[in-house]
Amino acid sequence: MNELRSALCPNLRSFQLIKDIWVGHFFAMASPCEVFVDHEDLFFAQKLFQMAKDNALRIEQKFSRYRENNIIFQINNADGRRIQVDEETSNLLDFAAACYEMSDGLFDITSGLLRKVWHFDGSDCLPDPHAVKMLLPRIGWEKIKWLRPYLTLPAGMEIDFGGIGKEYAVDKTAEILAQYLSTVAVPPSGVMINYGGDLFALGPRINGAPWHVGIDDPEATGEQIVVQIPFLKGGLATSGDARRCLLKEGIRYGHILNPRTGWPVLNTPRSVTVAAKTCMEAGMFATFAMLQGSEAKSFLEEQGVPFWLM
Image (tube, rainbow, N blue to C red; front, side, top):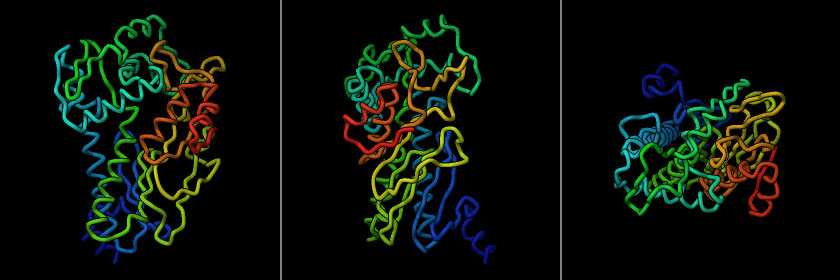
């Protein structure tokens, strides 16, 4: 029977039945990705998985800053020339502009340049302060001219959708799967998407029970969880420093950077998880909270969103 299934389903190794739920695995956007399908039909579940994987890889190809044949490369190498972008890219730029305004300039998609000097590899190697300072004149959304659908990026600057890309991929995948399920008259329950810890549940499990999502222990990441969240529908996103930080003389430097100073925001929580209607909204609030440093908890309380802070 296993040999027959392998012949019919060449991706079966990345697709397993675990406790009555089909779980598909793949790697995209520098993250392990999963799709959970609570349905007895293997082929139906695998179709949903393949649709999700195709969409995630499409978004990675289109918006990764590491590719040389996509719209981000065109923008970042325009040398000050005006670029016309498509509707999907325009929507992301509009969202990035809104995040910049709502965060008082702390959420800035032009700050990705700082990766040239910051390497959050768990070591104690801090960058040369002069090297950080030299990058600051090339950072700042306010220096960009964005008049949809035209973008003019000053020469030497870059944009980077890394802060919203995975969340967008999760929401877009959820939209595509929900549309497909509506065409085959199947309720959008029993499907959950997890791209590197950013999640969206289309609905509860088939029997109406919630999904159970574990929050990683930042002190023992990948080994144990600190709390389990019953989750029915919507987006869930986490921001934290468990996997990306530096430690120097007892001070932890997380990967959340202040674009005005070029240095990490200090006294942040180890992790912040937020639930919202969409994964992009959840990710936005989680990142905004980290940017508040020691005021993260009070900031989230003011927003009135469900959150879990470590």
